[in-house]
Image 1 (tube, each protein chain N blue to C red):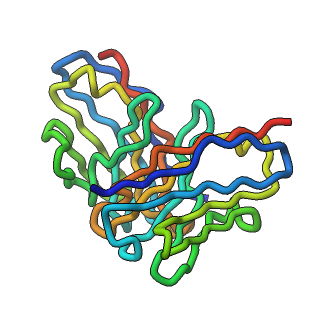
Image 2: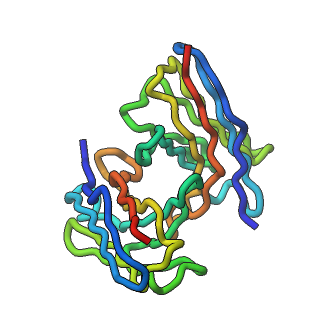
Image 3: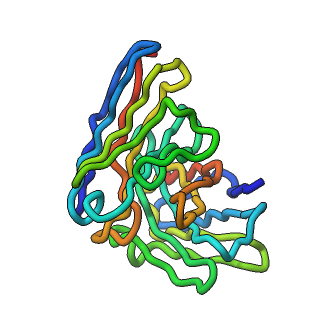
Length: 118
Length: 110
């Protein structure tokens, strides 16, 4: 079955960077884009960006331009989200989601909590 | 910057019907399909409705979606206790260049 399994919780200091991985299984990895979404404590969902797994093209929300990098390793069926220059407002649960052309974000990872604190 | 407006909360009792609205603009709902996601407490979001009014397999027919112009809606009939969750609309947005999430509606009272 289709699964997205994310890396574990992170604790970072302000100014540092965090990387979250998202390993896909159960489908052809290159057939669907991966999106990244985050949710701050008690808040709603916020879209960060996406990557075309086939050609590695990316699109980022303007809010995160310059701080966000999304990559993929097709040999490992894994996508990565790197967020730099962390501040306390980046404390959130980070989700990856598979984007199906028909169904939208139809499969989600379990989420990775990232805490930014001095 | 585009905004999608959802009521922050909705309530109902078991067996009732509730409707959640999602108001957008021409750059999102007006020109793209709407998706709805259900997020149960402490879990990842789950796809509930795709392409405005389609249900993925496994989603009960108590859930239905609609769209008209720059607004969309999610209706839940025959409310059950397990429907207590947060609900998000999320059409593609041309300004954002990706999916734009509404603020979410928390369904309570069940």
